[in-house]
Length: 293
Image (cartoon, rainbow, N blue to C red; front, side, top):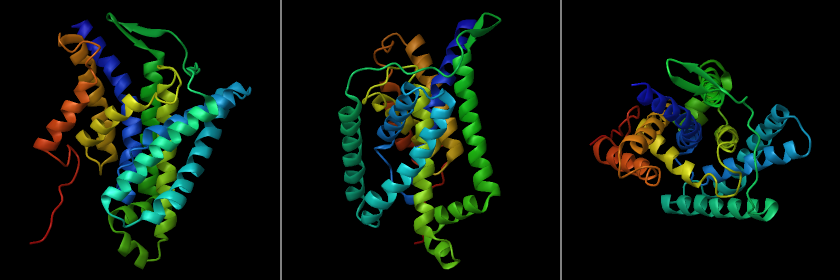
C-alpha cells in the first residue's frame, strides 16, 4: 500500500507541472479561442531567460521575477504583432501561425543559446519528508505549492479585480464587452501576456527535473494538451485537475502496467486525449456547445 501511495505522490508532483502548462493553454483558448501549439516553446524560451539571468550572477528569485516580467511583455507583443493580424482568419490559418511560431522560437533559442544541454538550478532544497514509509521530496512539495499559488492568484484576479472581470467579459462575449466600453484588443493582449507568464512558471519548474535544452518542453506539451482536454479547454480549474489526473495516471501506468514501463508512458496522455474526445469532448469541467435550431 505504501508503494502505491508513493507512486500517487510522485504522480501529483509531475501532474502539477503539466497542470501549469495546461493552465496557460486554457487561458489563451478562453480569451481568443486559439489553441496555441507554441505554448511549450514560449515556456522554454522564458526558462532560458531565467537561466541567463542566474548565469549572470542574479539571485534565483530575482531572476524569476525578471523572467516573468519579460514573459508577460513578450506574450503581449506576440498577440499584437503575430496573432492580431490573423484575427478572424480560418482555423487552419491560426494553426499554421502557431506551429510556425513553435518552429521559430525553437530555432531562435538554439541560435542564441545553442542546442547543448545545460543545468538549471533547483529553487527548492534537497531532501524529503518521511512518514509511514512514504517519501515526499521538498521539490515535489514546492512544485505543488507554486501551482496552488498560481491558481489562487488567478482566482483572485478573475473574481475580485476590475481587470479580471473585464477579461472574463471578453472571454464570454467580446462583442458585448466592446459595447460596454471594454477595450477588447488590450484585454486580449493581457490574456496572452498572462498565459506566457504562467507558461514561464511551468518551464522553470520542469527545467531542474530535466536538462535545459530547446526541445525540453516537447513531451511536456503533450501531457499539457491531455490535461487541458481532460479538464476542459474552457476551465482553468479543469486544467489543474486534469494535469494532476494525467500525472497520477502516467506514473501508475508506468509502475503497474508491465508492457508500458518507463518507455511507453508517453502513450498514456494520447490514450486519454482519444478517450475524452470520444466520450466527453468538452472535458470534465467544460461546457458543451449549445446551438439553437
